[in-house]
Image (tube, rainbow, N blue to C red; front, side, top):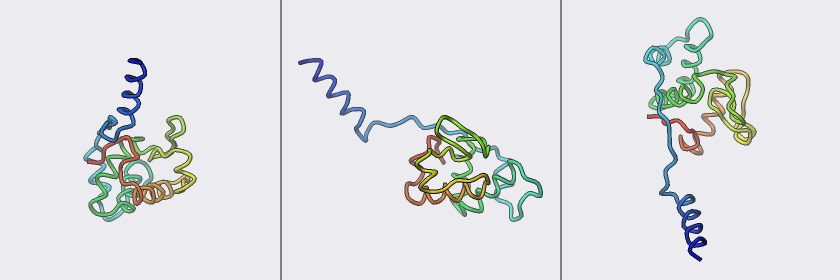
Length: 129
């Protein structure tokens, strides 16, 4: 009986909303933040241009948190993969089906913005700060 009691307690404890999942915080480099917040896009592709696009989609106060999450999740790599999680925003297969995905920073970031409008930053492992 004692074993069942403890198993029940463990299940309740793990599923309880008061249990916090460990989140990660790795801010984007300051040089990228400066580029991202610029009025004109960098002339060439690459990380600077991807950062700029993120701030065009996540405007105003959402720019820096979005940049931090994307940097932490993938280092802004378009083709990053971690198991079922793909792209700059590391979205799972069901999220990609629901919100979209693509081979460009624009498509991936617009999909992430649609997801963010519904769920906030909660689904991502990385903290926005």
